[in-house]
Image (cartoon, rainbow over all chains, first blue to last red; front, side, top):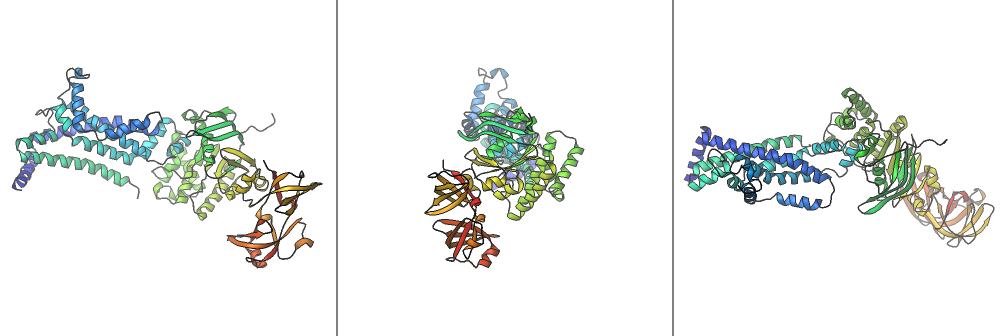
Length: 232
Length: 364
């Protein structure tokens, strides 16, 4: 118990003193996870809309694969991204292994199925005839998609939250493709693992608290928007 | 050609959904300013027909012509779809204000904000929802939501409006009020309309023509009174409320009048019959007259049967009297008549109907 209290008080002083290293690690975490979430939204929302609205053979299989992908173990993603980016791997020429770019890539691979899956569900949860109604109002294909996405905007916020939540908190892939290099690829989760391993519980607690506050703040903000717009 | 050019024409239309054919319409025509009611039981293809006409369903075969121009279903027909509007059973409003909902179709057409404003306000007025303009569509009652949906459809000034059971989810007062307003708007705007309903009263009130559908096909098309009084077959007869349907055999025919034997009783019917022919005859319950004494001396009705009252069922303004005349007969009388006749179960009465009140079709 003493260890815990001591850890919290040390953590608090690290946070309020704006410790340079802690700040750098926090900012890098945010940068990588926001970039990965953004990439997953850019890919996942159009993919999800397409899967929800189109009809082609094998569509159900693809949706099942996406749903399975929503629970991809980060270490498996880390392993495959590492293999792809390895010197002799198919993407080895990019030479980005052990850089923040590799971490963004791995995190985007984790978040994209989450965003896609939630987008499919959000669009499919709209009233069955809404698409026909929009078309009957004289909408072009693009206008139809735009209106349907706009109608699904609140559940789509859940996609953003789930995507960000999934990547800010993962450690397996980040440590594998980033390598936890001080000043370069060290993020909150990888640093927490390392500090815990070293027995520096106070630093580990400080990093964990920051991680929790970050995850909470982003989700709180999105929840406020969602609840404010929610009917009645 | 002296014929008026139809607004919409369907030729040999076949539509399949989920692997089975849901529509087979060899021909259908809608004229400008005409209101057509498509009636038929649920699952008979009425909604699919409207969706096909709206260019929203792929056709297995056949063609749809708008002002004699063939249309291609799907996104290719955006220009055509912009000349139509469709209102569904559920209001399907967007998650925004009533005003913005009504403006959607106009925004999709990239109209200027001033024109959008004018047209939306005019439409809100027509459907008496101007006071709700700024309200969220999610906070409307069923009637208000359906009014918004109708206003949204009419705001685009469509050439044809397709209405898929627009009143079905409403309670009776809301339904009546909306039906009144819609009738007025249709009359004033002169928009051609096709309305699906399984309620004959809507069809009778709003439509110039009634089209009866059964299992994806049109089985009868005509004025509401002709469909009601001269149904084309037993299905239509049942659907339009001809509760008295009997199968009989023609016993004799003479000079535009023939007799049919039904359950051992003879009925005289106006028309041409062929002796020994098997026929189906139907009589509307409201054409059956009930009297306490034999009306032979006072009526021109040729069919008079002594009967016993089996059951009395009051239905709003009218009462149904189920009679046993050797065959079962249903009469519909006003509640005032019920009171003055002092009928009750077991009463002995006379049922009469005219030879002209009987509609006959050949069994086939």
